[in-house]
Image (cartoon, rainbow, N blue to C red):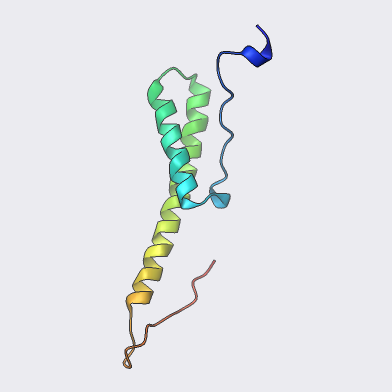
Length: 90
């Protein structure tokens, strides 16, 4: 069988959590869950996917936490009724 007609598609490349948007991270996490739930992976591949999932999950949670803090700041108002705004650390 030639390489062009191989049965299985190449594994998706690992996503860098820092470079991925929240939406990209959650899409990739869903792919990882689906692949792991399939149950026919070698142990090493399962561990690699699990590690990638943990990194993506932590990065996504960090983005959610920052967004929540920003919303809380935007909902704050001063004595004159103006929103209280502060720069968030990058």
